[in-house]
Length: 438
View: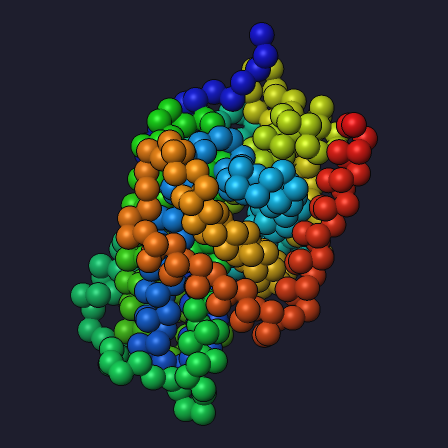
């Protein structure tokens, strides 16, 4: 009997995967970049709110395809269905080579940095701790999708505890800094347009990860119902959490102490709770980052497995192998960790995160366009869920995505070209492999 992925992921685990994957280190570490870009409390809050609304529009739009094409492989399958196998392969290739390993590597690096700071270890321990972190999560996921999902659910519960405590106490505490919500302004000698575009871009990594839930559709009990629900509800809750926690930071610390300060969360907590508060936040960040890495590991290893099932990859016979007891694609998971390991040794947090956000938003825009294309060409396609407010919400998602791509090309040209080049390598590999099959 052929081995198949087991349908054992329910509603809460799906919601936990969305929230657990998105809520990682971004809200703590990208706050420094957002404030540095504008030196304005109200523009910072506006950027987080707009970033959340844009991501919700993107989630609402992509959920239509996720529900209509609930197959393991997620977004790659939507593009393949809409544009043909080469485009679907190219996204899968970008996810295998850039997106998932870069996320795992970047967040593992952050875990190592925070762990070393918490326990006052030598800086030399940062990389070994990062490697052990990523390796332990890969090992846990080799025990089965249910174990990985359970880790995700537990991490979500525990990571929200320090965030909720900070938000509640921070909102009730006296404000040390006045915040004027309107009009939206910037700091002195900072152009409004550049400040706002840079601020919005900085939030995108913190909101990234929402589309990964589609990768485990083949293991969900009721994907047509749970997939859209998990994406929309999860992203709405995340937007509220991100906005409130940034409000607390801005109330508690002067702007100049937040801009460029990646320890702003710990500093704000020390003002609220004393020395213990800083340690509490660091522990919360460690749990949050660990859960995020788990989400990317859980969903990421399913991409090469799904591609190998159709013999789309070189060495497909290895990538489609499932462990005999847990039915997990262990070879795919091992390769994913191997690439992430190389990135941990060679990369850094900002370079890795900026590159993966840019590359994936190129494909996100293709997904938004696919909703329009399939509505026109295949009106009879079974759509258990339809994006509300069509065509306005998909248009908002598309315009926002184009803005992100263009801005990155202008401001980070070298990084953007590198990401595109790594992605483009997939095309000759695809055609070479297809020629071998024929």
